Length: 332
Ligand code: UT7
Image 1: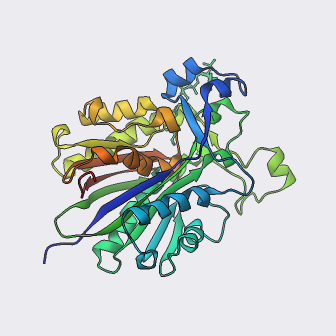
Image 2 (image 1 turned 135 degrees about the vertical axis):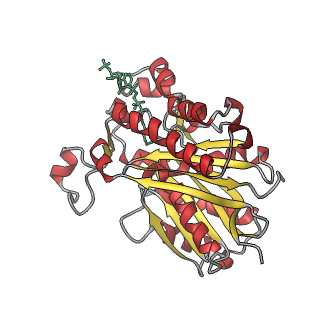
């Protein structure tokens, strides 16, 4: 019998309606559209508004749509992984909240914290459960409500991030399609450059922690930029070399959308033309774990069975990685 691989058999996304434009940000902090566009490529991002609305609101929409689209009975889902750094609450896991809401009552699930690389980590992990033969329908979600941890008085971070969620269904494949290989890395020494210190066990929420703005993202942008440019390109090159892929063999680069300049550098290193690089940063900004599945959702109608996709991501932690995946279906 041929080897079982984990194929993506459906993808769905959800972004909230509210559009936060560069022009609106100009009224909030000392910035301007020209700076944001030229330094990042971002024009607008989506924001989830409303009281008591957490990341699960977006993840539930994405997973409901995914199950409908793939004609999947929620009871057949046996695992749900939710990659996020903005869970609804420390526990229970957002994955469980989502499973309950969509009726995936036979699934076990957990959250995975790997910031912008979360979806890649989640997809690699979910794939192993499929490859082992133990699980047949695994939902992998990437979702973040970044607006809940952003200081809209800090121009260094508030212009970058947006809210959104995406989800894929992984199922066994015996035609050699799906996740072929992943190179995943992390380096905890990156903590000081990109982090949210408050709200955990080291600095629990207190009047003091709120006053000190410990519950917001802190990023030393230019340092993170240097690490991201080098590591994302290196890891993408590594997965290509390992699988004897040239730029011509790759149908699509699926890169994390932190900064258009980082994506361009990765594509150059891989010798891939702009027409084969998925981009949505101008419309959504950096949606952290949501970015990669949202890209697949946006480009789904252009993807063909057997297309070689290379995913690459870099994020807080530091975490980074690249995955080589063969797309498993033609457009509907
Ligand atoms: O997704 C997780 C991983 N994260 C990343 O990959 C992000 C990587 N970093 C970046 O994308 C970029 O570093 C940023 C977009 C965050 C910043 O761009 P940069 O070109 O590295 O700018 P910088 O931080 O070096 O700042 C350059 C100048 C500074 O002014 P001075 O000191 O040169 O006078 C900043 O104060 O730009 C200023 N600046 C701004 N000006 C207008 C910083 N933010 C803004 C702003 N509007 N929003």
